[in-house]
Length: 410
Image (cartoon, rainbow, N blue to C red; front, side, top):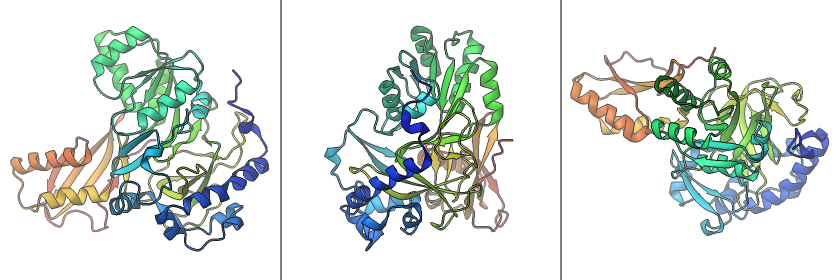
């Protein structure tokens, strides 16, 4: 199989832009048939939206607003023109945010990115992304099978059973979060289990610092990272040059000044905004809350699409911990459940090569029973374990933050 997935990856920029914006009016027309999009976009002249300057005049839709919009008009908030029964699968992601999956073979556009990561027909993929309610597992699964790979639908957790699967099927590819791959490798080393078959990894859902990349390389595993979301699918992917992420074909990616819809200059850090052209489920200028910057030159790998630096933090206080989004409204729910707490701040850090979080609470009552109750609420609402730290009233910073991401990846 060729180094490239198809000829679209190496075409001239002008040709790519022409194709994208020739298709955009059809996507806009489809979006306008969804009542919430019609209200959101207002009176627009669809036939005039034929370049990036015109697209930038349309209003931004924020991903952080989707849970409230969908709650008002279940399941998709009036933003999807097709009915739920028109799709192949229906999912929920933390928020909650409800998402449909198309009926085509590779609905999340993952095959192209996985090919760039080195996956080829006959590879065996241990897929540890979740298949339970969320689309993560199916996103990787459909892309890998479209390439001719065999997939082990392992899902996350249950380390011992995962090691059994690896020794039985001898997968040469791992798909999942980088943190869980390290857990598997460390557990195998401790227990004397053979996981030497794994030589490639496609990771996403969590930060992938250079220290962890080096640790995998020392064990003979070449790992590539993908930038993907549950509502869009594969947005950008790392290639063999390991120098930035190449934007996927078939989507329009903009980088805008946080809090606005105004595009920033190349090289300037801004918020990622994505438009997709699927007429059954169009997405128009969805601001994802993630920061990145466009790199000046095309990738040395030969692909000519826009190249970005990858994930560079959050434009809002919503953050991702161990592959799960954590939102300010979830911290508010914990406070509502425990009126003894006057104020709280979730601090996200790194412990070793894994994400960690501590809920700092201002309260006069600091007994152990309350700490256990708050910890249980933290796990129930965020679906993640974390520490609880009581502090004196008035001691937390007066800066409006309820989530402080203090992780460093240097």
